[in-house]
Length: 411
Ligand SMILES: [Mn+2]
Image (cartoon, helix red, strand yellow):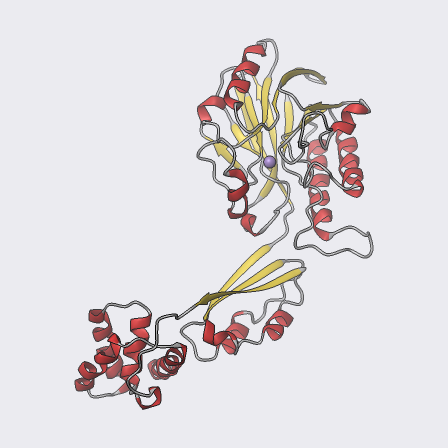
């Protein structure tokens, strides 16, 4: 028996998107819908017997009508291929149990070949390859281990059984963006899911596709598209599961994913930050990508960075952001000599002090610098006196100039 498992569609998320004037849809919604189309294509190509969705259909429990219509079109297409089971995830759940969850309408209309699981239950569905048991565990904040045990007890031994659950599992790896929202969940110990009643465990909730160690496949399909920078670089997929005599095997079927790209540029050690940034972004057009440039700099350098000019370089991207990671030099001023009268070695000593280098290492670096700059090594010892001096941003800039001169000579 062949089963398609996918999860976390989140239709309706529009962050980093823009309106496609031809369709009226946000480009981020379109990207997710495109992935869902590929899921349906995969189901068709692999001729699966059932399609299981592990939860989080929409952005939240009150999806807009356009998102609903577009998701429903994909469900309908899938239901034309095989029975579809939709599990309620945390984003689908209404604030209270009396209200409808985001997928209630499929239930209310009793859509052919579509089953919705909003309460823990073992569903027995007929497929073209015989019966399949789907033990559904919708998202709940706590008590998931008991739910799984109860479901396992209801499973019969006469047909393949899959646990379909929306939950966090201890030890699972999550993207940076998801950490905050998942912290509130009581993560399930992996052993709780590794029950002999099930041939395969189909998980949703964590957006990074991954396999949880166990004696049967316990798999997070992952989100169908990258949702945020936290998912940068993560490959996206749906899963084709094959259950036979010897147990279950699975294969990932890759899905298209928008490129999120973070470019970090550290201009703290340079005199011409703008030039360095332009150089770093040279040749990048980033068409269709979502790009953020993070510039590490001193507060005093920020004024010299022309943001509009940088953003213009990112014109080809669907969305582009410029962030500053500012290092504030907040130590009090105590200068007993005007900076312009300081020697390059003194400025370097200050610079290394600001960088947190030890005095021993600073001395070695000054000796080396003296060699490169052809300065009398005897000047290192007096210059070290500047190490103990605290400085302002101006001092740092002066030190930067000295350092740049040093780098030029080194080159
Ligand atoms: Mn979720």
